[in-house]
Image 1 (tube, rainbow, N blue to C red):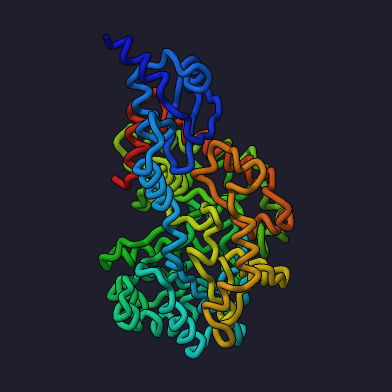
Image 2: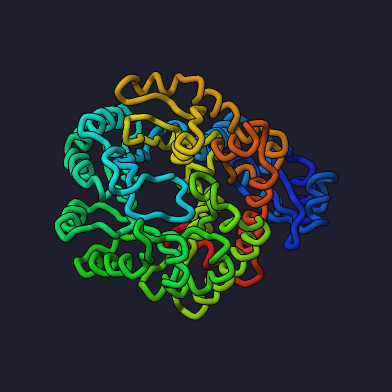
Length: 479
């Protein structure tokens, strides 16, 4: 009776659109709503070609994930549409991340500085109170109820009064129905006791840069007058924690000088009490572009180093030491949960403008931080939207630059991406693509790197090691 029932089921299903790729652990299937499944080769052939002989349990799983249906109904279409809308919810939530450059001055001269920061002693480059007020006025116009304001630079603490001025308007933002959070992206060299107290009292998160132990960190991150910054960063970090403020995150920039020493980086993060590390590649703008000969590495070298350090991190967890890598966790969250990862570079269409806006110190508004970098490096206005002193938010979003960026960043319409098995989880950084290819299509280099990382992440999701599978899911669900 079971066999008869199973055979009947096999002949009564309709394929729904899906992508596939053969992998060492089976045939990986994905679809537009972000579901995924792995079939053995024989079952895949039966599913696609004959519709016979697949076990009923497998078919039920495939149907539950919308790879097939017994009958196309209006109810099924509505459920599928709801799932798809949930995946693309960021489009309707516009705009939640607002990055404010309070100054372009900096007290460091980092070799890989992508922001092309000015010297700390210059008399210009600071945002004015008037510009800050107009910026907040435009932030209030965002449809999103959840607002994150990120203070950037240069070194933002060099113009701390603007940070203080904007944070003091929390009540105004909340009065308009906004749930607001603040982040200061600082090198931690210039934080006085009074400023630290203000940040702690107002629950402002801290994001800093840490490239590992002193011998690695001080290779690139140096003060204007010369000399390393590692000890000062660690000292300020300790002061924050001594005052009960643990909301401090750090990330590193991988370059030729530290790519072979990432084990030492992770060891340093653990020594300093961090439970995660963000392995971030070079951003080829500003000084990084000019110093490429001493900083750059081949993509294959980065992928190899990334996989190596992830294995190192996994081994720590097997020994009971809790530590994760942020990029891996974000991508796992994107794959294993119905929720977005909040990473604007991994959205389709692009997250620039829709998810985040960048307000420069002079009031210029860009679709992303990278757009501002390109403007400062090359005076290229391809992703400049306007200025808070001249234009309105509605004019920014009706601009030709936004229209072109969104049109050219829909993965489903880009040759090669439109049928890629990883497309449901991938996204576009249009500024980087524009820089590399002048919007002629996806750069092979960028695409190849993303595919290699996705292949690695999926290999862990479907690992034969049960501990690794559980670990990846704990990272995705942040448990």
